[in-house]
Amino acid sequence: MSDASQAVPVTVKMRGFGVGEKSTVPISIVTAAAILAAWWLVSRTGLVAHLFLPTPAEVVSVAHSIWEDGYANATLWEHVSASLMRILSAALIAIALGIPAGIAMGLNRWAKGILDAPIEFYWPLPPLAYLPLMIIWMGIGEASKICLLTLAMFAPIVLSAQAGVRSLPVERVNAALSLGATRWQLFTDVVLPSALPEILTGIRIALGVGWGTLVAAELIAATRGIGYMIMSASHFLATDAVFVGIAIIAACAFAFSLVMRALERLLVPWHGKG
Amino acid sequence: MLRVHNASVFFAARSGAAVQALDRVSLDIAERSFVVALGTSGCGKSTLLNAMAGFLPISSGSITLDGVAVGAPGADRGVVFQKDTLLPWKSVRDNVALGLKFAGVGRQERDARALELLGLVGLQDFSHAFPYELSGGMRQRVGLARALATDPKILLMDEPFGALDSMTREQMQELLVSVWARTGKRIFFITHSIEEALFLGTKVIVMSPRPGRIVAEFDIDFVQQFARDRDARAIKTSPAFAELREEIRAIVHRAENLESDTV
Image (tube, rainbow over all chains, first blue to last red; front, side, top):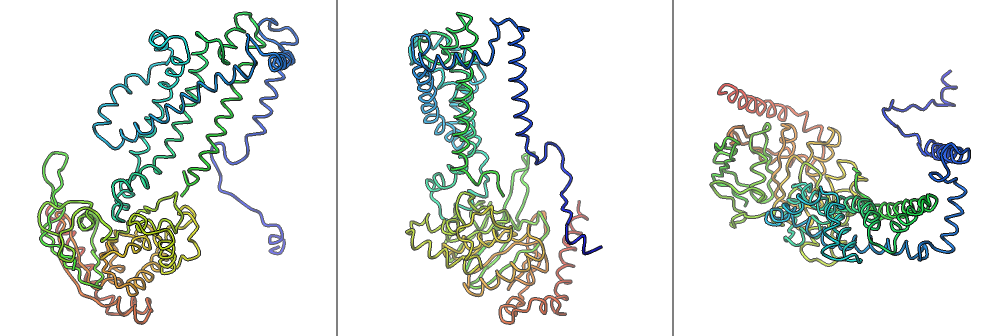
């Protein structure tokens, strides 16, 4: 009997709770397939009027023609690059200003006191509430859009950089000081890397906010951009082209999130371990 | 000589009243000595260490290291913490070399020195590992090597083995004695384990709480015995060891009872 139990050991595991370790990916794939099938069925059988819901095949063929011939007086690449240009330049400005501002707020009483008032006032506001002001002040060109996006993305980056600095354990600071660190060495070798995981999380949140704000900004006063493409398609009740626009945004946002995840793996592989 | 003279520390309680954490503590730590502070929580032993390290200013009295008043934290006083304070983004070797980097020592020289110290604590094969890949005991050994790297005049150790299991703890004690014997560093070590204090110290100070003060001092030599014979079991089971352990236990308990009488 003991021989038999040695031959095929019964492996066991602690009873779990919640989602557990088994992959959820197959379930998600089946769900996605079911949604596509339902879409196809509903649009094909005419259950929903064709004007409101095109069939999947139509969306694919419109996507193909937009790819070949462009849409609303611009090629697809011109629309996509206009949007990417706006979000990336706003992200760069927001990162360049937000990280130093947030770190200063985490370290310095004056910086915290001065910056807290404007940031706490404006960041809960929906960006579309101050978009009209941006347009009145800076016109309908790129400046107002990039400024709006920068403001929307600045707050999450500042707040996360500040949180990153404030979560730094005091023992870590004391350890560095008793190893002879100067104030500057303490900053570059301990404070900055300690805050990096939170800063990266802040940038990821900021990019999400950025996409939401970008499309809204392009709905008003633009001649290029994915948001503009969706808006002009909706004027002609071209729901198929609207679907294509949405799919492009989803793909771009997904690509951004993949890049951020890769950056996190590269820069803070130690985060959340040990 | 690290000399603490009549050091008192008061903290402000939330009510605004001053609460005394340390009451006129005087202590000398001579060259090559291993001083262990023993006491229950709240007896001011960590406050004393923080004052020596320069993390905490004292209200009155003085602390001098080789005649110079102790101020802000610095590389002349190496600290090993109870909590692991290694930098998670640096390899074990770079963590050990951190103090040398701060001092401006070149890459090659500090790597060589770090490897040498990792050898001293038995971790030469882990120089490229990261802290999260190590066990608690190994991390504390890295912390010890890191504190030694800048060649401090004294090592301050704040319950460094408090979070380890008892087997690992005994191994770490024996390792620490070897390191102490090899390097000849002065050590100020905090613990609440009587056995650990007796095994490690050349001098044990017993502290009692509220306000923290030294109530007894013992000069002992079990640690020299161990450095010579390397037989920890023989020492810990010896009648002399047991006798002293019971004597100190009585003092610690009396200190606690006195306190509960006055409350």
